[in-house]
Length: 143
Image 1: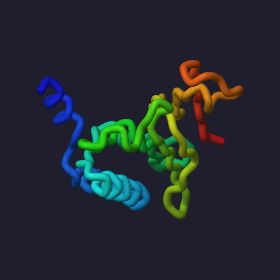
Image 2 (image 1 turned 135 degrees about the vertical axis):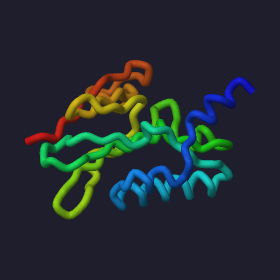
Image 3 (image 1 turned 30 degrees about the vertical axis):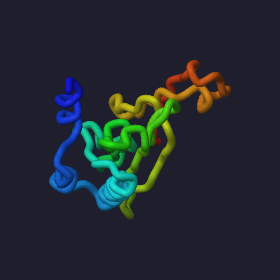
Image 4 (image 1 turned 90 degrees about the vertical axis):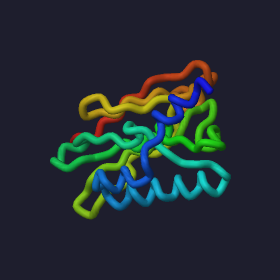
């Protein structure tokens, strides 16, 4: 039972995202993850770092990093993530709502100022390498 506190700390109430007043694109993507988790017999939840935001493209509006590494599916823990990492999506604001500027698999994804820093499995590096020979990639979106 030593994992119980970690499990409890990971999960927030399902209504927490709605309380943050997030854009419908992120709410829909999260709802899809939650439904998929339940479909495989899991219980979905996420940490406070599942969605982080910053103005990445310099338009004065929030942009978002959706990091599935911070999304859990109790009872099916490895359903979304594997040795290559977990899905991550960068959502950028436009006059017509959000669009996916980048979506892929990363072993780590974090905001650093107005950049997104990813640590990738070696097969996703340029040039590709062995999985254990990962690489760091920094994405910026300002003009």
